[in-house]
Image (cartoon, rainbow, N blue to C red):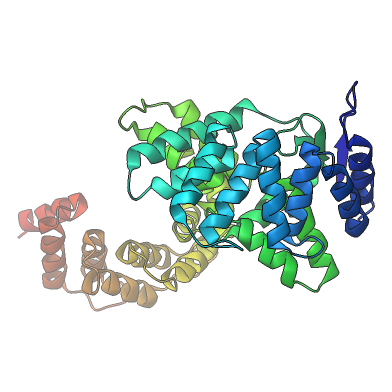
Length: 422
């Protein structure tokens, strides 16, 4: 990681001290960097004011919320800086050094959003999600437009939307930093205080350096927490809601942005989109979503190995993933899972031995506990053929009849055949 600075043709007051501070950052000397940033801030240098405030807020050296608020407000007074407005709003929202005041917080964050800071726009979208879907969609859409308007190069990322300061990153580190940030946020749309607490309380130098890198990435345009709204916005574009016409291209772009940063839900949505058009691409994204903890993706991966969707059939892997899925909480489709596991054991091969006894157990669970209609068909077949159980035409007939009443097409056909043979 390196901070790059483009010198202006006509240096602003404090620029020399700012450059010295950035040089110390590149040498991982944050104490001396802060000293020079504070010197540059005495000239009301915009970047220096923001960096000094952020050092004190996030605790990159020592946390001092009083100083952080003062410097952020100075940046607002002198420059109407959108990031500073956002951070002042966050401090009112959290009650940091000031009395907690959600009304004032929203006022400050709204100023920032109107000034073009996409984190603020996304924050407002999340804030209004429960009370006003219309306002939430408006701010999410604006955040996405801001995000796509200011795209970065492969390795340079504008810091705080300023054209003079850039974060220089190797491509290999970008996904790592984005994913680390996602983990730190833990589903919250207000990650600022999480970073600050994490920076202040870690005593491990390697961990602290990692958090510092994530901090710099998080205040670039590419580091904004768009993944909190991109799945929601992508879904709206995908199905078409209110003023949002169906736009598959934009929907996929929304999913793709968050998915490449490790957002499991976005990866799942992307995989679902590709199911009909590219089964291999679909399987790839289901695997990524599974690896990032999405439970439903775990089910999809198990099904893919069972049916050979985007990957060779592998009953052994399929059974393992199905068993892992059944161990999760608040799941559905258990009837489907037990039925498919029963089919694999009944067929055998592809990594597992044929075992009618285990197959019968799964079909029985599918029927008795979950009433799964295809389970009735398969259980009827087991009794009709005498697989793993004594042949019993009467019980087979009863299971086919039950499956037919649940509108299972195969059960209807098998029931009709039995009736014609009576």
